[in-house]
Length: 410
Image (cartoon, rainbow, N blue to C red; front, side, top):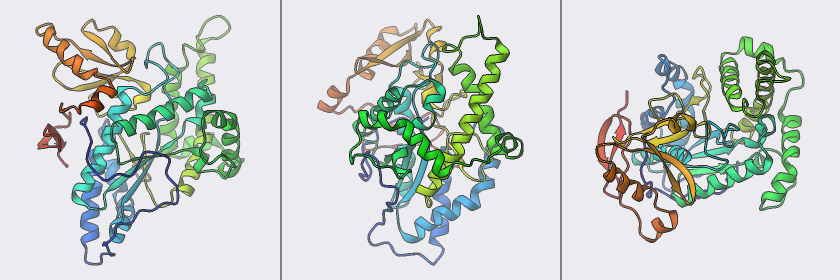
């Protein structure tokens, strides 16, 4: 997993982006001599380095979509414009605060994930001057009511995520909300009260504009491999997310709980179809990324937490810094069981775990003081601490003179 300070690169801002914006770099004319295809292939190889790789056929799935994805990247390169990607993700923290996550706000897991996406764009900029940007389309308000997450908590998570990206200098990350995808009258600068007051209207407008009344979701699950994989993924995380909110016991059997989870998963799919149509309408030319497992033919499945475990989305887990310098991911409750794990606080809140080695506990304790430094202190005196990327590969020095790994291309 890559994690380093990303303090270099072109500034694009971290506020919501206009969905019709396309950035062109001056001095770049359309290329007709084969440069576009060669450069596009290298760009796509970099993006594939950050793709989901937890399955035996992951590479084959990526290659299945290569011609389609290459044609999308080719258009940006031929025009000499910035490579634009969009990723519906980062909805809200898991509803399972008892076992999976610390609380309702982003923590180190989100920071590591945003850094990974930002680093991907930086690498693209190193071989292609116009660079790249990844726009995160916050999809929390599409589903939060189905998972017993309040509209206020959804807003708080999204706002804190944007502030985190700005503070950490992730200049290649942009943000967009559902308000950018539906035609709905709102204040020019929407704040919490307006967001919460209109959350139900956002969902209703989305379904009215982009939903399908005649959709047979059972048939879609049966006939569409991507839909089936997403459905099974929804079922898995819903069963674990909601078990403390709707516990099995008096008045609720295990079979009834699983039946209701299947119902919720299908409702999420129905809304997901409408949201996907809205994203396609609002971002017609962007390279489509996804956090879901897929066939690889229509979207690139990404791994936001490139650890050795299967927990790849930061809102469903916590992260821990191991004694060997590697990051790992797992539910918060699993780390809490380990007596060698201590909680590291940032800005007064629990943020991640750190493994304490019995042999050099004092040394690790000293390191934790550096890692737990507050953002305000870090701004007073910029840190020179380098973070090691887990991906095996060559090394290079970043602009702060730290050593980092860059994954090999395969």
